[in-house]
Length: 252
Ligand code: PGA
Picture 1 (tube, rainbow, N blue to C red):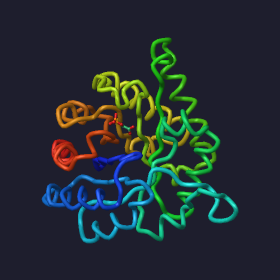
Picture 2: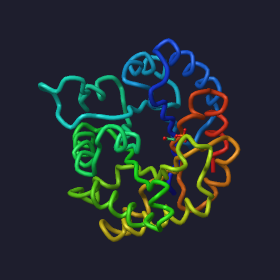
Picture 3: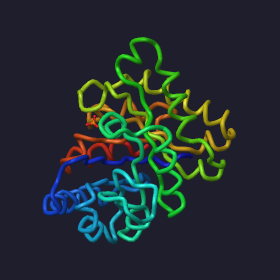
Picture 4: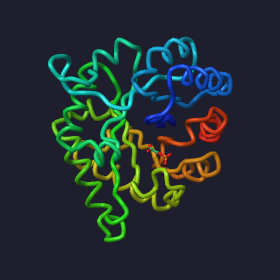
């Protein structure tokens, strides 16, 4: 049985003071939840304060990116050992906004995955097609390219530690969710790819989240699909009641 994982990607939102308020409220809302991995990914500047608030809670800490070198002359970057030291457990890698605005490629995604694994962080690796690609029936090609290109050089054991997030770019922040059938089709395809690249055991154990306009209203029908193991939530993770409602509805 794959454990459901719901992660909140706060993106470029929340000062540390605002982050503390959000997390204090969230802790109260989800205190009785079990059987779901709950993760919040604040901006770097709030990570330390959020970590302190989360001690003893059932919520884990994630970051939104990581650089592949441990230290050195890389102005503006943050490394895996630095994150690990702050109590970070998960790290989002290769989000479509990073691909779109910051030149992220399969190659850089793969380097970041390596750095995260080396330092004991769990990568949440994002894949997904944009609208033009979906409309020209290239969805599977793009998913194959993202998976093969970014998961290269991993052993089956390393792959089993990774979480994948399928995020159709056209569904992110648009209010236009993929239908459960559209999402399930791609999730099943990702599992097939993992079986081919690694093995069946890995493909059955890796958790695949769906992301893109997930709300308290649509999470139940998404999570009901056999290959959807959770969600990566943007907008709806910025308020404790909506994120908590998603977490609760996702308890399978
Ligand atoms: P959204 O963002 O939930 O606001 O669509 C999801 C994401 O980008 O991870």
